[in-house]
Length: 411
Image (tube, rainbow, N blue to C red; front, side, top):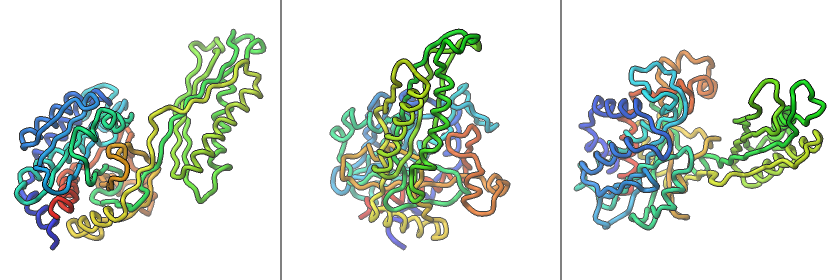
């Protein structure tokens, strides 16, 4: 038995599932949107201080950083994100959100629970490892809080990381752990489009240039970008997530606004899709006779690709296989989802990020489909109002974080 596995089993032997569940359910009942995680941050900070960490609050507004160690040995960062989403919960759970229109639909409440418990376990076993542990409670992952923490001096104010480690809850039969060496998550860009028309009365469309119709043509035409302009071997997803126009049924508005999201895994593919978006928007507006050229704006704060250090990932995946069983650790390949995880460390610092599956067995079995991928597509996903991780993953998720940290701290 390797030392990280032996230590993990020893240090986590007294973990109390009921206590973890109580903390998790409390966080789930009280979700907070990005940069508003005051209650969540305070609860995390309280537990870190009680465990012996030196705690700094208010990093990038609501971020929390705890430091434990004497500087002798490797510096390991563990990160958990804290924010919820503007989603109205429909799970029917007894601990469902009490905040109307806000829900932990991406599992960040579970991440905070894992992070707090792992920090406590490692602090209680401080004599068994050497180095420095830095625990990062990150705000606003959904809106770029990682970059905000970096801009607030995260890299300069705290011990420089030798490695950064993190994990994310995901759909899939509860109890699997997905490791992917190299590229694991895609880049994400948001694009704003404004179509300028000529407004007027609904009874006289001939006196207007209808931006709703033009924008609708844009939406339809954009569906051909990935299907007809990107090679089948390349990966890209282009989504029109917002369409805003008009105020009354009998008024043709003067403009229509679209908001697009692009996911890519290759810079050349990203550039090609962005060029196609601009070409299509400008072409449709010209065809419609719009009086003013459209606006196509790439928002700042997009997410880069997440690329695991292959050597580090192989090391931690091996620890997880020994700890949890080889059959439970698998490689699902890169996901089209995106993260700001890589923005938390300076360029060149290795990191590893993996997934913990969490769909309850009864939900998984009832889902249509035969194979893993068919069922994966049929169960509630992250950001769904029905997303409800199985509490059975509470303790194992602490095991994965603790063992990953000890793979370096115990060296």
